[in-house]
Length: 304
View (cartoon, one colour):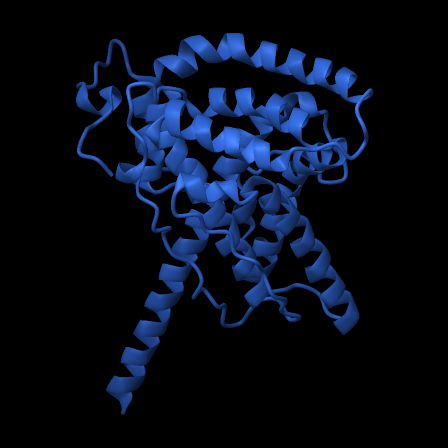
């Protein structure tokens, strides 16, 4: 993190005019690391989010409708994934805020760790494919598309392995938390040019129509519907740890009821925040487990 504090932390609390961002930052009812919460709220309280997003969102949704009409006249398999990722990387590096870029890169690491945790603690373990970009340029390797494909392959592979072995996902007596850690990507390494002002939600709303235009309909629908799996992943973690709080604030709705792609940008923001909270909860469980094991080892040593 940088030493610069956002306005809602620099200014003193005024009981006559309380700052809503300060209230959200100080509130501990939802699990988020303080540096992530600060970056998230600083990005959310930006001028871009306040003044630009209300105009961008309806325009982006109109573009999604128009692009859907245009794509009825294009070949079904027409796609330009390489061009898409080059444009996304260019846009992220030049226009998107440091906080938003940091949260985007973190998301790939968190998703990989969460899937690895579930796989390692399944009675029928399966291999996972980690996506851990260190820089924005690493995203050029089709990582946005690979992220969605990995998620579907994981759900399919896990459940096929469980069915083949005649087992079900359930509580782990000694959970393996070894794959969980804070990602190594750093906020201070993100681009900080004069034009890096676009907040996360505005950037996602802008990029969603581009995503639709340069991918096949099948790829775009698969990406949008992957957001419905938030509950699924939350349920898997809750079953392993017997911790229903892992379903907290997972609200992309029922996985069997796909939603319209018009709200894909907003749902993607919810998906990112849900991933941050689930990863934070898993890290808390890891620290509790380590403390318990250390305490048990100490008591055993004293008895001997």
